[in-house]
Length: 326
Ligand code: CP
Image 1 (cartoon, rainbow, N blue to C red):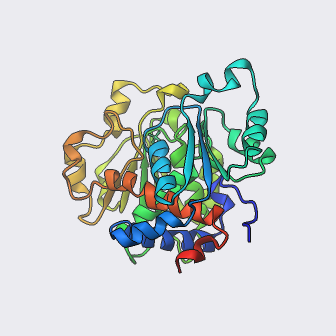
Image 2 (spheres, helix red, strand yellow; image 1 turned 60 degrees about the vertical axis):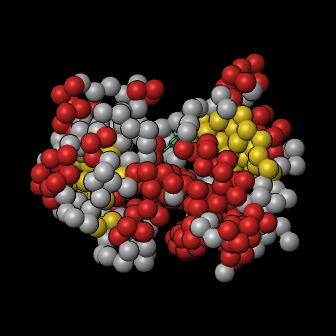
């Protein structure tokens, strides 16, 4: 039995039911990874599969957590870091030609990070194996949003949908774009995890209007601010802060940075049960002084990348999909 071809270019590629199953499987994998015999079982699940990890942009978390997820499922991986320099892209080869060639090498999946928005969709349009978008320009970063959701669900357990405050470069931050798409996708389902989204950014780095409109159209309360204020923090359940994407031309003045930098004083105004998230890497917007606060979840969030990406690989590649772990 072979799995029908599916790609993960956007969080919208998965239905709410599939996302719910993915979350359950990731939770199961997370607990299995702590038990040696279960870890051994996981290593058998995709041991005949091979993945190509093709990164045209720098990465620590996505690249390593995918590499480790592949290994923990028994897969072999062929990596290309700095693919813009070390692949034939430097000789003028198009992303379409590269993907057609890689997809024909009898591998099973291509995990692609690329600086151009829309590149993952272009790759998927010509690929005969699943494409996983590991970040395309200012577009999307769907596997990050899924691990963000996992982290939020784990932390909030069965509490009611809450208020998420998104802070920083909301214009060019693709992790935020995918998270907002996920809020919209799940807004009318049992997985609805946010009822109010607050957007805090310098005016020139605001969330693209199309995404703000999607939030409102799906019945999510949405409000915008240009500085972190006590009233915003007092009833935030999740504060998701992001760095300025300098590599994409984003700039902030020192004054703007101070207006949204999360300080230890800010953290004290958050509810005890609130969590602080960041996709990392961080800069001055999230001082290390906050790391020891019990609300800080960003390293755990990064670590959740392994079980969530393992679940995504099983979903796309295993003949039984996620039911292999039922
Ligand atoms: N969060 C994230 O995508 O980090 P990397 O760029 O290090 O992969």
